Length: 111
Length: 114
Image 1 (cartoon, rainbow over the protein chains, first blue to last red):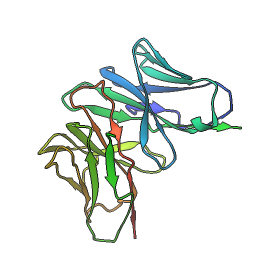
Image 2 (cartoon, chains in turn yellow, purple):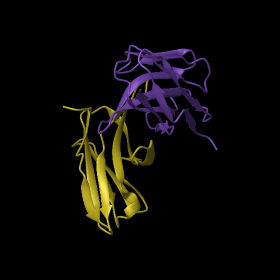
Image 3 (cartoon, rainbow over the protein chains, first blue to last red):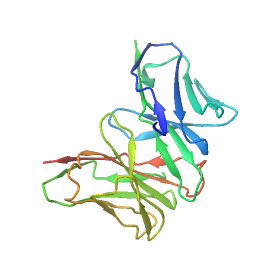
Protein backbone atom coordinates (compact mmCIF):
# COMPACT_ATOMS: atom_id res chain seq x y z
CA UNK A 1 0.00 0.00 0.00
CA UNK A 2 1.35 3.45 -0.86
CA UNK A 3 2.05 5.79 2.05
CA UNK A 4 -0.10 8.49 0.49
CA UNK A 5 -2.74 7.74 -2.12
CA UNK A 6 -4.76 9.99 -4.34
CA UNK A 7 -7.15 9.37 -7.20
CA UNK A 8 -5.18 10.66 -10.22
CA UNK A 9 -8.34 11.83 -12.00
CA UNK A 10 -8.76 13.76 -14.18
CA UNK A 11 -11.79 15.39 -12.64
CA UNK A 12 -13.53 17.36 -15.37
CA UNK A 13 -16.03 19.78 -13.86
CA UNK A 14 -17.98 22.75 -15.22
CA UNK A 15 -17.28 26.27 -14.01
CA UNK A 16 -19.15 27.02 -10.83
CA UNK A 17 -19.29 23.42 -9.69
CA UNK A 18 -18.18 22.12 -6.32
CA UNK A 19 -15.55 19.40 -6.37
CA UNK A 20 -13.90 17.38 -3.63
CA UNK A 21 -10.73 15.31 -3.52
CA UNK A 22 -9.68 12.80 -0.93
CA UNK A 23 -6.24 11.62 0.04
CA UNK A 24 -5.54 8.62 2.28
CA UNK A 25 -2.38 8.04 4.28
CA UNK A 26 -1.11 4.84 5.82
CA UNK A 27 1.07 6.01 8.73
CA UNK A 28 -1.03 6.76 11.78
CA UNK A 29 1.94 8.70 13.27
CA UNK A 30 1.62 11.34 10.56
CA UNK A 31 1.60 14.78 12.12
CA UNK A 32 0.96 17.48 9.58
CA UNK A 33 -0.91 17.68 6.34
CA UNK A 34 -0.91 20.06 3.41
CA UNK A 35 -2.45 20.60 0.03
CA UNK A 36 -0.22 21.90 -2.74
CA UNK A 37 -1.21 23.02 -6.20
CA UNK A 38 1.00 22.22 -9.18
CA UNK A 39 0.41 23.78 -12.58
CA UNK A 40 1.64 22.03 -15.69
CA UNK A 41 5.45 22.08 -15.86
CA UNK A 42 5.72 24.27 -12.77
CA UNK A 43 6.79 23.77 -9.17
CA UNK A 44 4.31 22.80 -6.42
CA UNK A 45 2.98 25.74 -4.46
CA UNK A 46 1.46 25.56 -1.01
CA UNK A 47 -2.32 25.92 -1.20
CA UNK A 48 -3.17 25.40 2.46
CA UNK A 49 -2.29 23.52 5.60
CA UNK A 50 -4.86 21.11 6.99
CA UNK A 51 -5.76 21.54 10.64
CA UNK A 52 -7.40 19.01 12.90
CA UNK A 53 -10.56 21.07 13.23
CA UNK A 54 -10.77 21.73 9.51
CA UNK A 55 -10.05 25.05 7.92
CA UNK A 56 -11.27 27.28 5.15
CA UNK A 57 -9.56 29.75 2.86
CA UNK A 58 -12.02 31.48 0.58
CA UNK A 59 -13.51 28.88 -1.75
CA UNK A 60 -11.24 26.14 -0.41
CA UNK A 61 -12.00 23.94 2.60
CA UNK A 62 -9.65 21.33 4.00
CA UNK A 63 -10.65 18.57 6.40
CA UNK A 64 -8.72 15.94 8.35
CA UNK A 65 -10.16 12.63 9.52
CA UNK A 66 -7.54 10.97 11.72
CA UNK A 67 -9.71 7.97 12.55
CA UNK A 68 -10.05 7.02 8.90
CA UNK A 69 -6.66 8.45 7.95
CA UNK A 70 -7.67 10.74 5.14
CA UNK A 71 -7.69 14.39 4.30
CA UNK A 72 -9.97 16.16 1.87
CA UNK A 73 -10.02 19.32 -0.19
CA UNK A 74 -13.29 20.94 -1.25
CA UNK A 75 -13.36 23.62 -3.91
CA UNK A 76 -16.56 25.62 -4.26
CA UNK A 77 -17.59 27.71 -7.26
CA UNK A 78 -14.79 26.31 -9.44
CA UNK A 79 -12.96 28.76 -11.69
CA UNK A 80 -11.10 28.03 -14.90
CA UNK A 81 -7.95 29.11 -13.07
CA UNK A 82 -8.40 26.27 -10.57
CA UNK A 83 -7.36 23.81 -13.29
CA UNK A 84 -4.19 22.18 -11.96
CA UNK A 85 -2.93 19.09 -10.19
CA UNK A 86 -3.52 19.03 -6.44
CA UNK A 87 -0.92 17.26 -4.34
CA UNK A 88 -1.56 15.86 -0.91
CA UNK A 89 1.46 16.08 1.39
CA UNK A 90 1.97 14.32 4.70
CA UNK A 91 4.69 15.13 7.24
CA UNK A 92 5.86 12.77 9.93
CA UNK A 93 7.44 13.67 13.21
CA UNK A 94 11.15 13.35 13.64
CA UNK A 95 14.48 15.09 13.52
CA UNK A 96 14.28 14.83 9.79
CA UNK A 97 11.08 16.19 8.42
CA UNK A 98 9.98 13.10 6.50
CA UNK A 99 7.63 14.34 3.86
CA UNK A 100 5.60 12.13 1.58
CA UNK A 101 3.91 13.47 -1.51
CA UNK A 102 0.91 11.98 -3.20
CA UNK A 103 1.03 11.66 -6.98
CA UNK A 104 -1.68 14.27 -7.32
CA UNK A 105 -5.24 14.64 -8.57
CA UNK A 106 -5.72 16.46 -11.81
CA UNK A 107 -8.59 18.95 -12.01
CA UNK A 108 -9.83 20.41 -15.26
CA UNK A 109 -12.50 23.11 -14.99
CA UNK A 110 -14.47 23.42 -18.21
CA UNK A 111 -16.19 26.60 -19.45
CA UNK B 1 11.51 38.92 -1.59
CA UNK B 2 12.56 35.72 0.12
CA UNK B 3 12.59 32.61 -1.94
CA UNK B 4 14.41 29.75 -3.59
CA UNK B 5 16.23 30.20 -6.87
CA UNK B 6 17.12 27.28 -9.09
CA UNK B 7 19.29 27.52 -12.17
CA UNK B 8 19.40 26.85 -14.96
CA UNK B 9 15.77 26.43 -15.91
CA UNK B 10 16.68 24.01 -18.70
CA UNK B 11 19.79 21.85 -18.91
CA UNK B 12 21.02 19.35 -21.46
CA UNK B 13 23.50 16.62 -20.66
CA UNK B 14 25.66 14.64 -23.00
CA UNK B 15 26.39 10.98 -22.39
CA UNK B 16 29.12 10.50 -19.80
CA UNK B 17 28.93 14.08 -18.58
CA UNK B 18 28.40 15.34 -15.04
CA UNK B 19 26.15 18.37 -14.63
CA UNK B 20 25.44 20.53 -11.58
CA UNK B 21 22.10 22.10 -10.71
CA UNK B 22 22.15 25.17 -8.54
CA UNK B 23 19.80 25.90 -5.63
CA UNK B 24 20.04 29.06 -3.53
CA UNK B 25 17.65 30.23 -0.80
CA UNK B 26 17.37 33.40 1.24
CA UNK B 27 14.66 32.17 3.58
CA UNK B 28 17.20 31.44 6.32
CA UNK B 29 16.04 27.81 6.36
CA UNK B 30 18.40 25.22 7.74
CA UNK B 31 16.87 22.27 5.89
CA UNK B 32 17.10 21.82 2.14
CA UNK B 33 15.97 19.03 -0.16
CA UNK B 34 16.30 17.78 -3.71
CA UNK B 35 13.46 15.95 -5.45
CA UNK B 36 13.00 14.42 -8.83
CA UNK B 37 9.65 14.34 -10.62
CA UNK B 38 8.97 12.16 -13.64
CA UNK B 39 5.88 12.62 -15.83
CA UNK B 40 2.72 11.42 -14.11
CA UNK B 41 4.62 10.53 -10.96
CA UNK B 42 5.01 12.00 -7.52
CA UNK B 43 8.07 13.67 -6.10
CA UNK B 44 10.90 11.37 -5.05
CA UNK B 45 13.54 12.47 -2.56
CA UNK B 46 17.14 12.39 -3.78
CA UNK B 47 19.09 14.02 -0.94
CA UNK B 48 18.37 16.23 2.03
CA UNK B 49 20.38 18.37 4.40
CA UNK B 50 19.30 19.52 7.81
CA UNK B 51 22.27 21.73 8.51
CA UNK B 52 25.44 23.05 6.92
CA UNK B 53 28.11 20.42 6.22
CA UNK B 54 25.66 17.59 6.71
CA UNK B 55 23.48 15.74 4.22
CA UNK B 56 21.74 12.38 3.92
CA UNK B 57 20.66 10.12 1.09
CA UNK B 58 17.02 10.02 0.21
CA UNK B 59 15.14 7.28 -1.58
CA UNK B 60 16.89 7.55 -4.97
CA UNK B 61 20.40 8.90 -4.28
CA UNK B 62 22.31 6.61 -6.66
CA UNK B 63 23.98 8.56 -9.44
CA UNK B 64 23.67 11.89 -7.62
CA UNK B 65 25.88 13.88 -5.24
CA UNK B 66 25.40 17.04 -3.19
CA UNK B 67 27.32 19.44 -0.99
CA UNK B 68 26.23 21.87 1.70
CA UNK B 69 29.09 24.27 2.36
CA UNK B 70 26.83 27.25 2.95
CA UNK B 71 23.41 27.55 4.53
CA UNK B 72 22.05 29.28 1.45
CA UNK B 73 23.28 26.82 -1.14
CA UNK B 74 22.62 23.14 -1.88
CA UNK B 75 23.90 22.20 -5.35
CA UNK B 76 23.05 18.83 -6.89
CA UNK B 77 25.41 17.05 -9.28
CA UNK B 78 23.92 14.51 -11.67
CA UNK B 79 26.77 12.16 -12.46
CA UNK B 80 27.32 9.93 -15.48
CA UNK B 81 26.34 7.02 -13.24
CA UNK B 82 22.73 8.22 -13.35
CA UNK B 83 21.54 6.37 -16.44
CA UNK B 84 18.10 7.94 -16.69
CA UNK B 85 18.54 11.56 -15.66
CA UNK B 86 15.79 13.11 -17.77
CA UNK B 87 13.35 14.60 -15.27
CA UNK B 88 12.13 17.74 -13.54
CA UNK B 89 14.35 18.53 -10.54
CA UNK B 90 12.95 20.50 -7.63
CA UNK B 91 14.81 22.01 -4.71
CA UNK B 92 12.96 22.81 -1.49
CA UNK B 93 13.70 24.23 1.93
CA UNK B 94 12.01 24.28 5.30
CA UNK B 95 12.50 24.88 8.99
CA UNK B 96 13.97 21.58 10.23
CA UNK B 97 12.53 19.43 12.97
CA UNK B 98 9.12 21.06 12.85
CA UNK B 99 6.70 18.81 11.03
CA UNK B 100 4.03 21.50 10.93
CA UNK B 101 6.13 23.66 8.65
CA UNK B 102 5.58 23.19 4.91
CA UNK B 103 8.33 22.97 2.36
CA UNK B 104 8.88 25.79 -0.10
CA UNK B 105 9.99 25.02 -3.63
CA UNK B 106 12.15 26.62 -6.26
CA UNK B 107 10.79 26.78 -9.80
CA UNK B 108 12.72 23.73 -10.92
CA UNK B 109 15.26 22.64 -13.51
CA UNK B 110 14.35 20.44 -16.48
CA UNK B 111 17.20 18.13 -17.40
CA UNK B 112 17.31 16.30 -20.71
CA UNK B 113 19.77 13.98 -22.42
CA UNK B 114 21.26 15.05 -25.74
